Length: 331
Ligand code: KG4
Ligand code: ZN
Image (tube, rainbow, N blue to C red; front, side, top):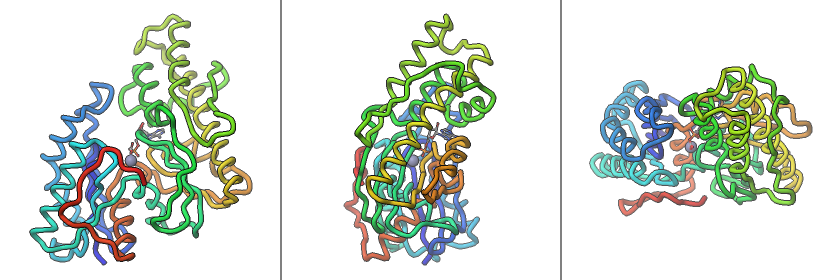
């Protein structure tokens, strides 16, 4: 089955074409240069860029797959959670395309897309497994018993891990998005130079990263640096200390959740799962089989939406033109 996937949930305009689970194309058009000077995503700019780009990105994805619109059998579109204006662009486009070309439409939850990114890889786990989704908008643990069977075990009570990366990067003055920059600066820093808190929330599988973010803010103040004006060596040491705290907490919670749920297989996914240190340390956890989508499938992309839509369609599900976008959409 040839599936067209569309994701416009945040700041990337992405369209992919799959043949069953095989990726024929996965185009991700990044808007970062339009948002970076604001230190975060400006929702109004994001929606406008999606409108400008969605048709070209779709044509590019279909061309790269060496197909035409006639070959597409199913249109899978992300309808939440995300920025409502951005989601509406992809959703309205998908509905119009489905109506005009008489192709089936299926709505996909963005988080289900992140979880199912692993099924685009050659190596994927059998059910049941544990998933940690760690992205700019979410830090959540799920027990996954089958396609479509997800049980939330824990979630962040405040900032998502990726959001904390982005905010700390802003304080250090290293631009947006912060994750990849902190990732590489941390490699050159000393994680023990500064002592930052590790928010374990003992006894709970929830997360909380806003205190850690505030601790970085206070540290900069105590060291006498203005936000955004920090010397390079201090930036590297703070990045290393901050990253070490985040990863310690993520790894610890994976271990707790896996032992509580008696699960041996773990999928780590979402933008922060592209982090080199997290990937390295996760693979070293003893007694657990760790599955990581390749880095480009961890960050937002439409192939993950297409594969999740494909599995829903195989289960006999379909959406109609009443499908709506939702900023908040639990799995
Ligand atoms: O999954 P994603 O592309 O979008 C959301 O659904 O949120 O995740 C984006 C987040 C951003 O906060 C970005 O800073 C973070 O993922 N990120 C990283 C890395 N690459 C992206 N965080 C840490 N290390 C990275 N290498
Ligand atoms: Zn995402």
